[in-house]
Image 1 (cartoon, helix red, strand yellow):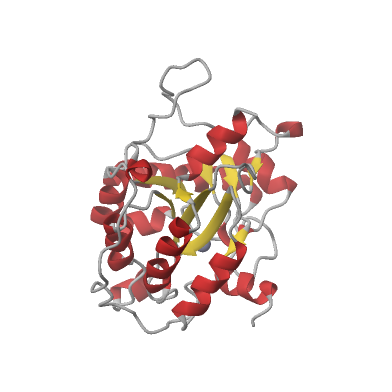
Image 2: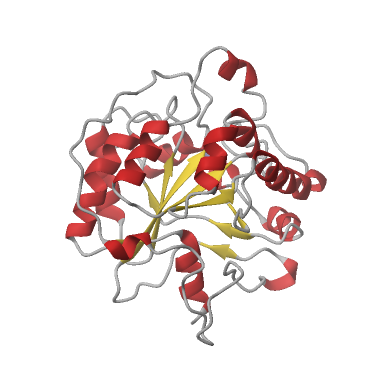
Length: 290
Ligand SMILES: [Zn+2]
């Protein structure tokens, strides 16, 4: 078994290594879906009983720091949020032009076929490279788009070898991603931000707070980055999930080629165990209601 820190490191340098592309996993039999998994966003009632118009966020942290959300309530109702980081780094344009695929259409097709509400943390650079897919994700009520920075550079000085965003450029990098989303037609990106590599400190939290975002981490690492065995990725997720869990996976086929196959194992098994898939906004909304 790979040590957690190693898996996290692999997660953090996604895109740094060219790996084989996995495609052609579209032939699985369809799984039955639960109607409750397909509720449209914004349909959850606020405490006052009206339909929530704005995405739920956490209260600001102390001293002007962005709040950090890691997982939802460990409640009796079993909910779990699958999140997919659509990674592409600002300097990877030449590699994309050379044929490397940072997208994963088969994964998105499977999530749709299995009707799995999901949150996609997208970099602005990814949206620019794949504008049609970004718009398609952003206009599908099954999904919500959240912010994974424009550049996928690190927001701390040491983060697995990623290039670094200077503190006075952090807010602009986050806002540039939202601008990129709007430009390609993603209208309602959520005010949630996932730090590249998950690396943050107080300086980073203070700077991204100016962009009005809630930082979203995770409590379950799937280990899908650079994985070659879909079964072990699925086992890792199934071992880690608890009620309220946030699972981090990737929507970047060149660096996470087994994710789609792992999802085909994870989704029916978690449903069998009584879990309902939700977007991150539902977990945050429930957390905010105390
Ligand atoms: Zn990432």
